[in-house]
Image 1 (spheres, rainbow, N blue to C red):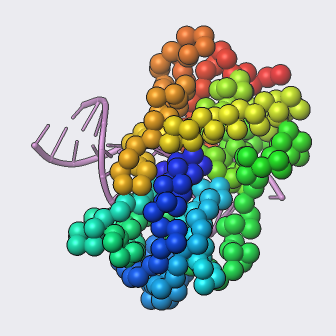
Image 2: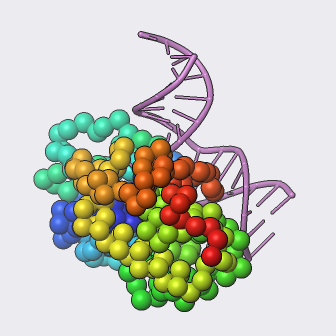
Length: 274
DNA sequence: AGCGGAACCTGTCGGC
DNA sequence: TGCCGACAGGTTCCGC
């Protein structure tokens, strides 16, 4: 569900609620939600721990504890956090429930594509080791894109979604970035030149900045903490707009499938050649 | 190594 | 109204 701007929004909201607070209880109803960790092990590891920081890396949320160690949370497609009073019954798709005293924090995930895991050392967490460049870091620049896309015949849309290259982009923003950069989603990675790489970098940062400023995109079921919605869906130019006019030239927006995912684009504005 | 496709899940929406 | 297929902000695994 959520991409970088949505996760960033959730982290900022969650931070103000739980940093400096202590986890008093932990219930995990669905064992399969943990990556190879036992429910009891996880619960024992986090119970009694005080949250010192909450950070984002790509689409992951990283909890850090005063006592050392931490928790990695990925929301998959449908994960969301909701604060409830301790008396309220858990919603249907609750995958974790953490008691903080005055409120309980519920993690819901209908499709259960998300994951939760406790770690002693962050450096040993595999998904984080393989993570690509953060879009707002200096490491993410034109030269980096050129290096990463070199000899890659794969469609640029698929390369943008590769988390080992760029951390945090998902299906909505990949289409929006390519539209702004005037690049066809099926353009082969190795054909991207230096100025196109620079365009990709600047438009990636710009789209993500704008989306964060609008608290992310709510299309079907992405919700911020406590069921609040984002507003960036009002500024999307191509995503999910098949058949609607291109905001630049008026041509009809097309949908194609690449890498098993929908890509939306304008045939006239986004060129595969050159 | 890199690529395409399937698998993991549940919910929703549109067509017949 | 009901059934059925297509599709959904993601990741990972498997075979070629």
